Length: 398
Image: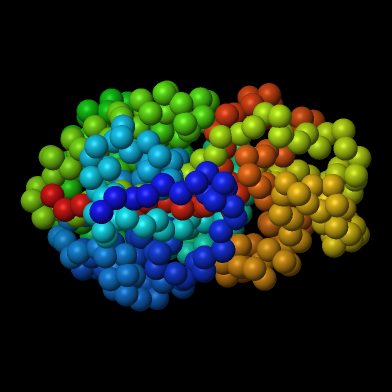
């Protein structure tokens, strides 16, 4: 069979929010893989890793490799599958022909927190690309953790990697050297050993060497996301990055010992912006009034209100201004709808008082605080559309 690509208009529609406890969710992947290698690690969102394994279709294996291709949404891949013969072959298998869901916001640090712990943003405390630091009152960014609390202080859930390592299971992460001790790695992927190299071929070799032993190997690829941000996800530059990624993963698979399980996932998909549809709130008094901090990112903005402000009234004002191009929730509405999963008391104030989810290919920015580079990205993600939230989960066995 082959994946039939749906019309762009349908892919830009909002999808129903998936429960974080669903096995067809990025947060279920590592619990399911832990069961696949014989060391099940239950989490509050996925208390039965074996059930998650069966639901995702992972076979049992002594050694497993999970590849995370940053920015490779299911439909982004499906639309350019001609450039990726290895991945296309996997997609055309029945067990791989349907996407799974990623987190809200559909952006890297939030997804990595949930992926790495098998939980949800409401438990990890990672709720926006930027979010308020309760200690300083300012904004912290959750890739570099600039201005944010210490990673281990913010993200207190044990990771699957550290739990496996503590149980005596080999865990190896393979990626660029700069990520070995980064804030995001410490928050979401701590545990086990790290093998880093700036050279793609050496990273592939490191993953093959690690996977020759029993246990779990994590392999990260950033090129598709990086290219998509700067050139958009539909151009020739993106296709070239996909081709290179496909060749890299095919080389990885060829080098694995027979019987090794390999699973390819992503953190999010990507939409291409319409510059004419960008909204800059800087000079719109109705939108900036009563707002103390603007956080999040252009596809999913979080607004922190000034003290004593009626957040329902603020949300109503934003709906009146932007209701046609964004879906807007108060914090209570977002939590009630399950956007962040189970929300711990300590995490609740980290979520914005008002959440603004861009529709279609709209971006919502604030030129008072955001750089031209950040506002000028051609490929973006973070909101609730199917293009952003539906990701691949492709299974292969060496």
